[in-house]
Amino acid sequence: MATAGRKPKPHLAAVREGTFRPDKHTEGARYEPRDPQEPDWSDLLPGDEDVQAKAHEVWQTVVPAVVRAAGLTDAQRHTAIEYCLTAARIWQGERVLSRDGMTVMTERGIVKHPMTTILNAYRSHFRSLTGELGLSPSSAARITPPQDGDDDGDIFD
Image 1 (tube, rainbow, N blue to C red):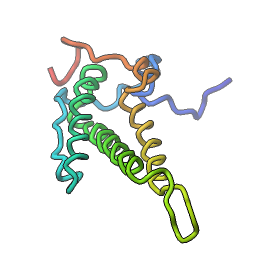
Image 2 (cartoon, rainbow, N blue to C red; image 1 turned 180 degrees about the horizontal axis):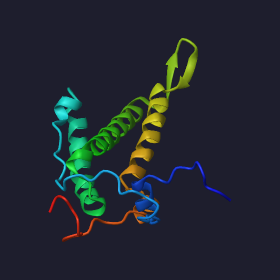
Image 3 (cartoon, rainbow, N blue to C red; image 1 turned 90 degrees about the vertical axis):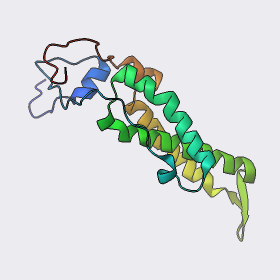
């Protein structure tokens, strides 16, 4: 079957899946290899020191691993920040549900706690970020770790 008109897979998708071929894919953007800088969580999550601490904990646990495994750079840090924020918000929402219960009383009677709907949206976003960063077992298996040393043509050497 002809593949005319079909776009090749994006570079990172091909690398993650282990199907990258120089004759079919371009390498895409290349970023300077610099560890991402952790944001000031009090700017992003004002007023709740427990949630700020959770975001910091997730950053300290996850980001160094992603830097080693996938070569995450400072230019790509916004995905990691979003991952940490989402994880912290899920943690915060679970605390609310633990305190309030899964249902609430309204003028129409007992209904599902609104936080369950919010948490479902955060969890969906969390799953997509987990795949982007290679943190699920299946996405991690598709990532080729960055190579140490000279890669013949690295503009940042």
